[in-house]
Length: 481
Image (cartoon, rainbow, N blue to C red):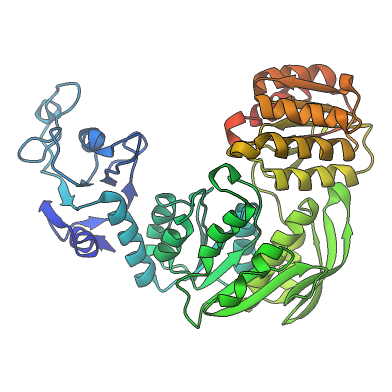
């Protein structure tokens, strides 16, 4: 249980108004979506200031607020002044003055609260980072661990300096294990998140070129991701992908125990006799410190096999039986828009990987398309990959070449100049110019797609979130229903 006094003690703040013993059940940072009885934390950011919405939160029924300073939207008794001008008394008896906790920095306070809850919960924390596959690895690891434990996982990709604390506050329910992901696009962010989560187990999946626009090189990305190694004690464990040379070269200095995983390389959790099964997934024999087990997963591609291996390493560390791991691996389903295989009634087989994209992830998806059999034609709608900075044109051109090598019969690129460069590179690599089209927006791409795709086609849709290629997916679902 959290009380106002707990918040003040943890954050170094003070209870300005209300009962210090007041129980606080849920925190909110968005006055638009909060429910009555929640406690509103007014965060400041570069483009927003939650203090502007303190009065709105109280009008919506917030039990109290955390602020850096008392706002003009509150009268001297700390009661909200409604934007409509209607006094509380017009609707009945006025509510008592709400709880107000004042702190020096609300963002830091939220992080301090989360760390305190994490410590008091007694839960073991597994934290996952990497350039790609974090969410899938999190979901698979949580599924495997659920065979023996009460497991919490953070929702969606709440993995930054605000989302992670909001997730960790939920550990008041005292799950046995919490599985969370740590995201970043600048140096220092993983270090901050490790300091908040204080993970018992750290998982490093890969180093790719996502967000390379914020870094000088892939090596610089690896250095930033390597912050997952910091602040470790002798009882902490690192689970590391030794197929990735940038990871393998950085793990020697980890202060705890190391458990490695990899495909067809020497590792503690090792996949051998790997058999790609196209759209049916992958089969492999997996060797672990607890023995060997055959595993089949319907998740597409070798990238997802690596994610399953990472999750297997977590599960083995926590004593989950291998037979249970194999049983659950066979029943896995991809997360929404993350490699979903959809067989539409109108005859199109659709790989919906529209949630996000990066050059490395796109190349792996194209490898899956290349290995697939049974379709009349192979096609792709590929959105521009954002946050690549000065590397954008070169990396898109590389992916255009990979698209041609994957044997695509049709390619629609979506976005700006880098997406156009991808299409030109595909033509240069051998695709007929008539088989490559470009659209400035995903809605335009959807129009082209419904005219050019036909029953029997295998279609991959992938792009950065900001390009919105999920709109192409939704349109195809309607047109080929």
